[in-house]
Length: 66
Image (cartoon, rainbow, N blue to C red):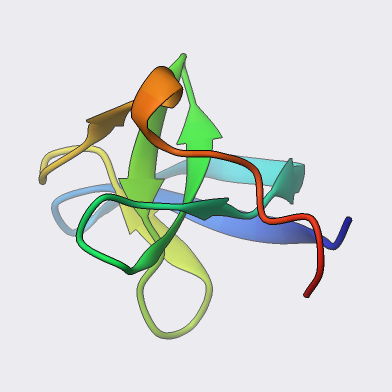
């Protein structure tokens, strides 16, 4: 399983780094990662935005081959 390091934002405010997160397949066919027990879509530049949409972990399986 491939893991990814992310930058976590709340809108334009940088919150912190999130290290070694598993990639997950989101219901919208995108790729996301878990932060605070929720799956957030990953945007260009390997960042997530906790002010935007998220998914339940149960709806987003870990991507095993990447």
